[in-house]
Image 1 (cartoon, rainbow, N blue to C red):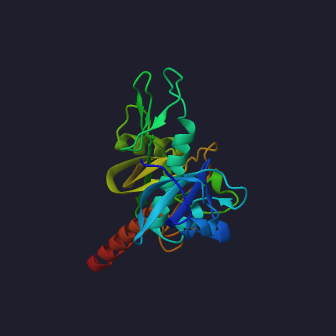
Image 2 (cartoon, rainbow, N blue to C red):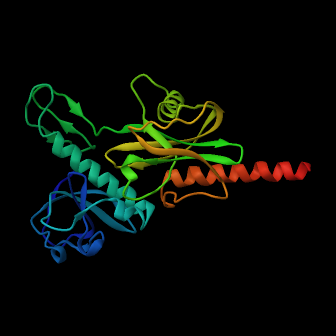
Length: 265
């Protein structure tokens, strides 16, 4: 895509990204003229549009205020997706300066998100890792787990994992659930997806029903895993996440079943 050396008069949103981090001066994504943020002379690439303004990517590390894109997630989903695009593109360009086949320096394509080798004519695109995430229901209960990465923030969420080579998404759901919790599931059905730039994932959300087995949490991945009644849930993920949607969808199914049973009585 077209790169621009900033003159200072360019206007828009500024995503300055490096190594999975995002520049957040004053705790927010900077907006306005390039010169107002001391960005004159830097190399920038337009990567989209937000609220009628150009979104610019600058693949560079700033001396201060480099933070997590998660900060943006709580503000607006659309802005978060653009932040994720910026972070992932910056890391893609940083990790693809040389061709993996012949070692020649590469250039950026002017027409698509790609790096090109003029020596052996290889073409590289940003890699996206497909992941599954699944809400599992057993009667009036939902399976929630505390992951090891959440030990500092005691959030309980649904199970998730990366898709392996040669697997379908549904096979990945069944395998990950078995590996992490020791239970079998059935009636696996797709719900929705969400780009997730940690580091470069596409989360594919599913719902499933309990089939058999007793919970035995994988100690390498989970602190705990338990069945929770839909009216007595622990701390769950925030509303901007697909995990929260799957939990809410599962809770809705639990309530429907309770209402149906009560209507029969």
